[in-house]
Length: 177
Image 1 (cartoon, one colour):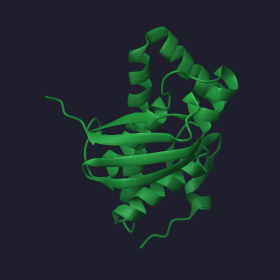
Image 2: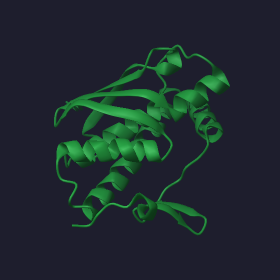
Image 3: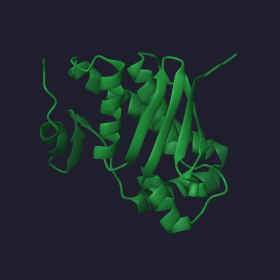
Image 4: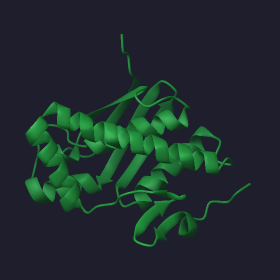
């Protein structure tokens, strides 16, 4: 059984940031929020879909790769705990998976890098805005339950960018009829 060592698994190779041997990009809230604002302003719902899809693909790929390396992470509880810890250790915020199963579930986020950045730069929104986290959750859920990307749909029910108490997400199986 291969133990998980954060200091070894999350680090740098030269100028690149890596997690379990996979490179990933990490940017400050200025970059992330300006990218989101530009995509929303320029492309509307298509821009939101680009952000969601990119986060879903990267979340799925990286989490699947990590689960394949650490086969001792087997139970649903240990997988979702690892997803929460990864999200937090990457500086993205705090997420709590609740009522999770193969048909979906509920996730709550009391603190988020994207929320803090958005509120600091643009103030209160009139609509939910955690598009990156919605996509990331969809990708991680697909990896956890061994499905393909696009299997789940994540809807943000309440958002701290709208000055709600917390961000709440509902995960459902996507119906492509």
